[in-house]
Length: 204
Image (cartoon, rainbow, N blue to C red; front, top):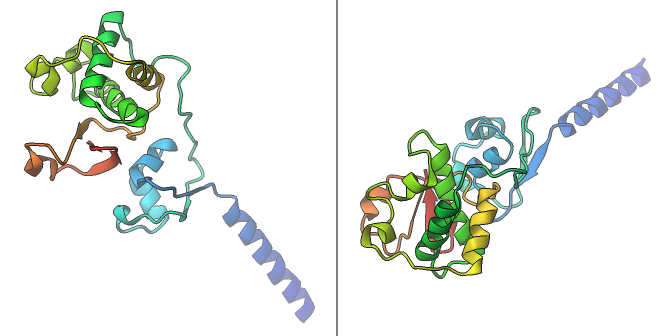
């Protein structure tokens, strides 16, 4: 009888481990945020925090294995189709805006700036065309000051193309700013930073 109980116990342990390991998981990498991970899998960051008993989302440790809900499905980084409609005139304007706003940034930083524009177009909080988003009063200094360059390099063009097809290293940001040069530090302090790329903070 004792041997039978031991066997049953071993089987129960085996199946419980098997069920636990069947859940999808994610290993935290440098630069990851809980919000960004949740976007990658189409789930709520609050659900992810609750599932992993995370009280402070800002204390993610690189290498941590996060348990994902069974319904989490990874999203592809690149869309087969452009994520927004873009005219040739808007594309030229956006490429030059990226050149002005992301001057000195690497390709990732330039893609990030372009992605913010497309995120705004897709958001109910902003106008629904690239032209109108860029020309919205008080939003982009190079537009306000008339300092937009007349041309831009190939890297800026590549950044716009990649963002147009879904690449978004910001994880859905709607705003960006340089914390070292901003004149509205008090205002930005009220916004949660979801990603920092190069000299820019990206926020919602």
